[in-house]
Length: 246
Image (cartoon, rainbow, N blue to C red; front, side, top):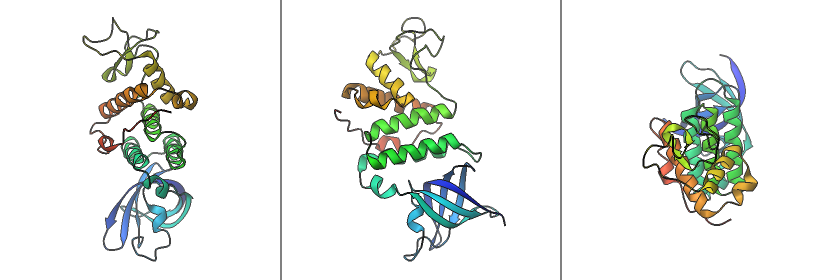
């Protein structure tokens, strides 16, 4: 059977029998795959710890009839321990890998892979607030999947301007008068600016944002994500939303 190598992020795992595990992986070149890791639940397993959620590894696999089989695993990013030790980081990472699982298929998606690896690395290192990292990841992952929100021009008619009405069903900000449905709530322009910075990865702006803007932006990102993913993210309601001042 053909043998191949690839880098992968572990999205989730399931027990199989007494000692094996099925792992769902987002790979660098082969997209999302499911593979069997034999014997990894035994105490003496050489690479069981490298195939836990949030870990990044260089894998050797061979193609099976239904599931591929992992034969080697070398760690490239040991993010699991650091992320699991912090509740906010853990819940954010759980939402990230669930989103990646829903947004990617068998075809390769290098950008989705690199985005997820970077987000998990940032969480493990505590570079930014966990919720901010999650919100930025979700907006950018959805954009790569074809659901890019607009936080500048009206998402309905394209009119430029400093719009303050956000309608997630319409794709972002809309004209306050012409395109906003009756009763649409308005948000602060500073919140709209924060949403744009999260989408662009402008961390200098994001890290200096106000707590109120962060809370409001986070709610909009959650609503936008749940709207575009048919069944939503089961882990999103469990995300720690304790946002403190920068």
